[in-house]
Amino acid sequence: MTPWIKKYRLTKQEVAEILQDFLDGRGRPLAWDGFTLGMSFEDEYLENIRIRCANLSQEYPPEHPNEYCNEQGRNVICEYIKQLTAAS
Image (cartoon, rainbow, N blue to C red; front, top):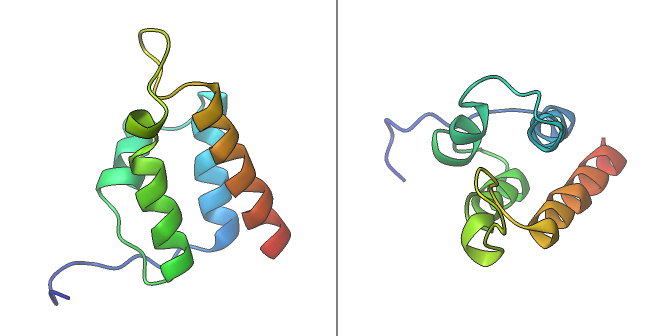
């Protein structure tokens, strides 16, 4: 681990809100990029979710322009939201 990389300490509920905002299309501009590409979490569970979400567009390619991933990928995000809110 490199010491100059900031590790974020978000709660499970905060991560669930980021995911829900993304699905609902109400997140801040570039919020999804910030979550998937610009963050790293101390909590390994949250870090694994972040990494998986960062790769959903490749795992579940979008079917239409301006989409991040297809319906299966969105279902993965929904499942993470359920897990995160149940754990809070």
